[in-house]
Length: 119
Image 1: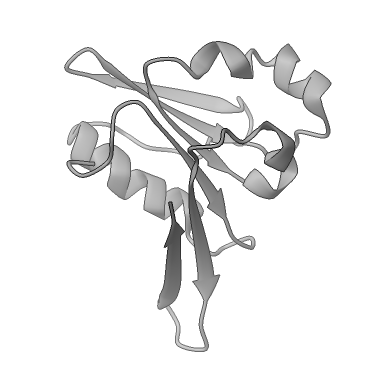
Image 2 (image 1 turned 90 degrees about the vertical axis):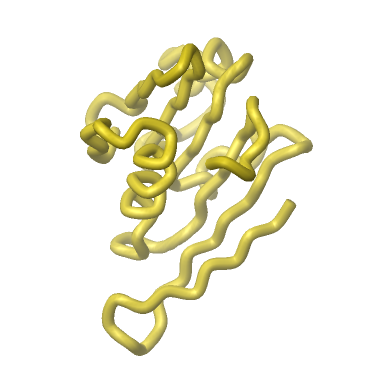
């Protein structure tokens, strides 16, 4: 997080079990070491705040279209924050131009991942 600009939008891509939430957990812990980080699967978004900075963690797995994004207030979260989305494949139409894309890929080795970051 020390190298991540603020504000920022990070879109995570990866299959089920790839480690997207674990990746976010590491990001949030560098932002707020005492935070308890869980997957926002059921409530769509989790908020973490530290030093007057906001970090929003979205799970887009159940988002079907732009109407769903509006109904959860997605666009209201984008200003002055770090926004990280899991299952970004479901919202490619809503990703900002300056998005940081992170693809997490399982390998044949247990607990090993290939991580590709695109700016």
